Image (cartoon, rainbow, N blue to C red):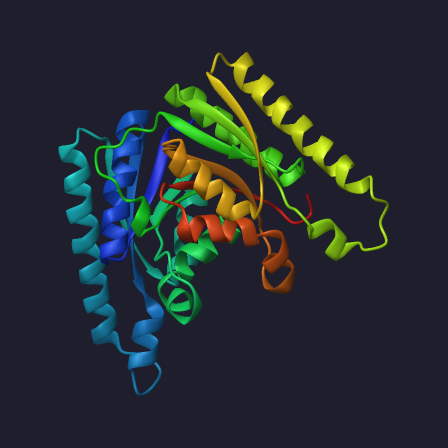
Length: 295
């Protein structure tokens, strides 16, 4: 599946505008049609009115959203891109996902704060929710990943042998083929984690996991080579997120593509923690591919 349409949401903030510029560069490289969406956040108007709503504020929010969409659309057209602009009213994350679904778009590209704790809960909550519920891949671009003029020539595909990682690698290979980018297939082996989780497990369990992960790397690399892509394989040991980011920095990687679970709450803190950490701290854009929980 090729990426031919890209949704770029904006709220007018500095992270959103910087990410939009980076996303436009990718759209230019892909020759993709861009949809610019600005959402007038209905919760602001609802919370501002003494009686539960404020029509005046709602109108001003809509006008601001229209100006944001028009400004960003004009900038994208100056790049020679085919652009459509839209303004909607509602809860931003929900409207972004609904728009992508209704228009059959291939991916969403948006900024995230790249912060942790309370700051991220406020600033990054929209991107976080979109990643969890979007029916299409989401390209997140944090402050560290904004780099004007960088074309995507290499994509890192992490794997641990799971179906989740496999889904991310599959879409990553498709994108790499479209961009004619070099693929880096990497697995990270975690020392000591297996013993902490399963202290009574046989000692050869770690060997089994290692073999499964390295076999997955070989399979992904073979698939990429079948597509005619230049491919590099590597194995690292340590904390997955830290090792992946270190590898990306050391090898001048331009993008990371990986799977994420469409979950929330405690289960997501375990299953999606590596992707979450990479999204927040990676020095390059992260292409997250959501795998529904039932899969």
